[in-house]
Image (tube, rainbow, N blue to C red):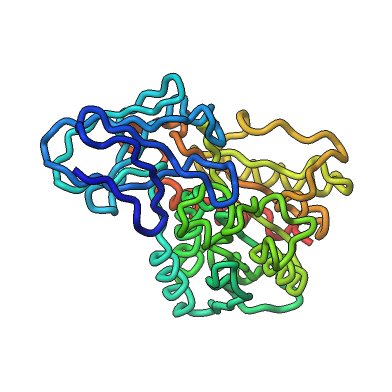
Length: 375
């Protein structure tokens, strides 16, 4: 029996793995940080033998409430990820499996590999009206990439979509993959309507270093990128520094920043009610987008989510708030669950890569409803 995480986005610490019925594990912290919650590892063993796995010390993880009602995901082929019934008690997540193959993978959510990220960029740039630009490099020397979809003009709206500031929130890049496949479909009516009026700037992965390192929340230096938007730097947060400068170069009329939430089992958005310049125009844009998304997909709801900021109390180090404030634009943080969507529960897969992909596609239809109102 062998347990390893020595691969892209792998993360686990083996405490004891002698008895298949008593496998004891922990999760490594993000580099130079106390954040930890993301795990991804492979179990190599004898098929059709019972195994009991325990991931410990989770009371000290980034979001302990995220483990209540959570079920781990597993895969044999790294393509289909299904839920494994799990129990959380006294800081330990436990699950029991009888592998059907000699090799079985486990993860916090369906991984989105760096190779798949590169494949997505390569595919997208080969499509009509899409260009790939490298803005610079991360601390580990990886490319910071943005895709421009559409032909720029002064009359067109500039819509920015960023994803995966927190690398363990892999559902964000699955969302972007779905959105890109729809937006670059030359027979799709929503895409045609949008590209006649707007240019999209899309960053599928804001944190490639953290993604490869198996981090939950930070970049290579242990910095939480979604607290860097007020004063980013090439020394600590080149990812934000480069993207924000590009936003200033192109202009911005709308921004969606795509995330995942560990604890809340619903899809929701967080707006910019607390920024100093929040007014009736921004409120109308937010309300119009939410109303459209509610109409488009039953996967979205507006009852559960984060408390709204009081007027003038927004945290301007956070991406969507900083962008809404600087550009006086519609800006939302879009959150998806690590668990399941309790409005439409699926005991076999929970909230999944495939549902994230579809949610990204559905979002485009909602943007059609607000694009004429942007300025």
